[in-house]
Image 1 (cartoon, one colour):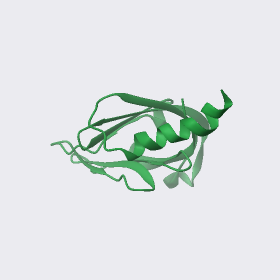
Image 2 (tube, rainbow, N blue to C red):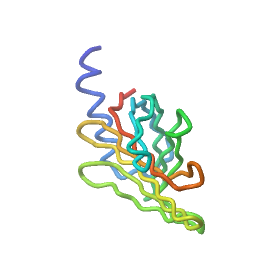
Image 3 (cartoon, one colour):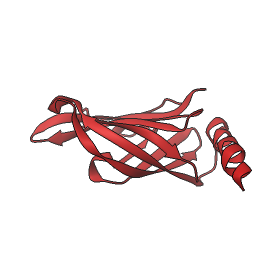
Length: 142
């Protein structure tokens, strides 16, 4: 059982993140993140657990983060009339960025392949001004 956790799980995640996916199954994992808001003198946010759901349909990647409100995000590499998405995936990480056409807010999620580590940011409105919420942390494979 311990061999599964230490050897096979990283291999399975690596295969999932390296293979071009054309299926719509959802891969889930949880991450322990810490965040801050740059424009508020790097105000620290309370550590939190977020659930990451990754889905790929064709060449598009869809990532959903659920958890405390400031960390929640739904982002995809798909470009529409409302969002301009971009696939940031390369040999080092899986990632997606998106920009709102309406207000210019940016969103980005990157997950390291070797060390399964989440780095993300999103723009949000706080006290009438757009601020950037940065967060990152290690993830636990299922």
